Image (cartoon, rainbow, N blue to C red; front, side, top):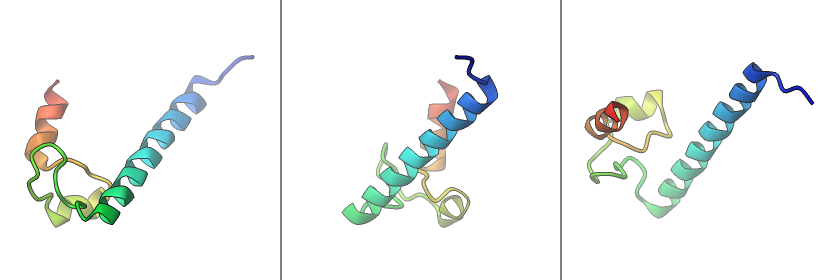
Length: 67
């Protein structure tokens, strides 16, 4: 069967966001929500307001994005 590439990409992106939200809920339950998973530093509230499932502080995310 033919798969629409746009639909497939959208479904993949949605799945990734759902996984990140689930991981954020797990961190909330564990008491580590708002802490960077790389350095343990605080993720600023403004970042969490925009992306509540953020797992990295801005500095660590920049390092991830450079790769």
